[in-house]
Length: 427
Image 1 (cartoon, rainbow, N blue to C red):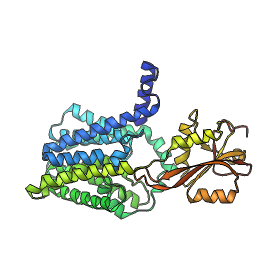
Image 2 (cartoon, helix red, strand yellow; image 1 turned 180 degrees about the vertical axis):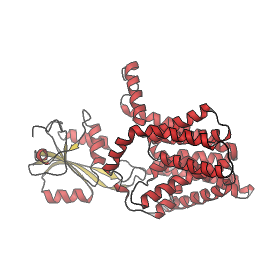
Image 3 (cartoon, rainbow, N blue to C red; image 1 turned 60 degrees about the vertical axis):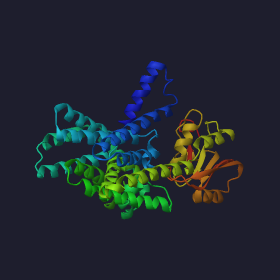
Image 4 (cartoon, rainbow, N blue to C red; image 1 turned 60 degrees about the horizontal axis):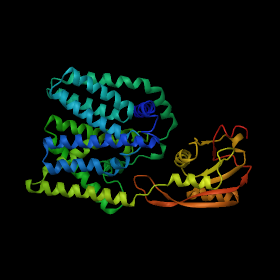
């Protein structure tokens, strides 16, 4: 759904303005910013319906400036859209429970269809809604069946994506997440909003976790409160269970679908305090979120892919028969963005052995694997530039160097060679 929307916007812009509005394509990041901002505004507005102003502001600040929501709010990816769809899903779910109508049910089904086609973790929200509806039915709610049918109908749209989903599943691109870690699951409510390293961030994570638990207790007596608990907690538990069963899908950005409801629960947790302490505590939480966001943004580093590409060009890259040895722990983290910034935006792919035997004249290497390759290959470096390397985008701490080198041509490299397939066809 995300790429369908951005493709449609790009085509419309091309037809209306000749492509001047959203070219270069990075300008479509604004769509993520707008969706994230609307999600924050709606969440804050709903918080003010059952919370005082200070806790409501705390909820909105967590969602706006929390580490993970803020890190992905401006990316050319689906996270801003799915965050907004999660909020709309909850709003329509609540409205249909209190006052159902055909149009509201139709809207609910449409949001479910859009959400599941945007990110597969939306299915955890769907499952959470079914659990909540089942419990409410046991407690005497009357309008459960039409809502359940609307949600079920909305999931049918995912059928068109099943073949591609299975293909993606087979690629195993989630294997980097690693083995099951119960602690990581338990602290997820805090790490979503305070995910950076450091003792202060660790204390903030524990504080958010305690606030979420208190919030669950505070709202558990009301149907809409139980809905918040289901939408905020169930996706974490379910994703953690899938991870424990052997599928490593658990990561903070995937669980952004639960972030609005966790922020609301954390804010609601302040209501468990003595009346005179609610506002000061919420204000302290808001200040902590602001300070955490400032600390992360001031210290956050990103690999400068544009400069890496410019270094290749300065060293003579022409895109013809030039091939590159990429020696890194995760080569695609380099080849995809570097290819985007090279002239012509080539897609650099790993060449098969028969084409990899072509002479290569460039190398990009980082980390222990890169240093090992350099020592073992006896490559003669003709020119080299060094750049700072950083770890995961949300953490952004320096973790070594990336070296871009022009090397003496090698004729015996058969692995780790990347280039442009069509240009390398005659090797």
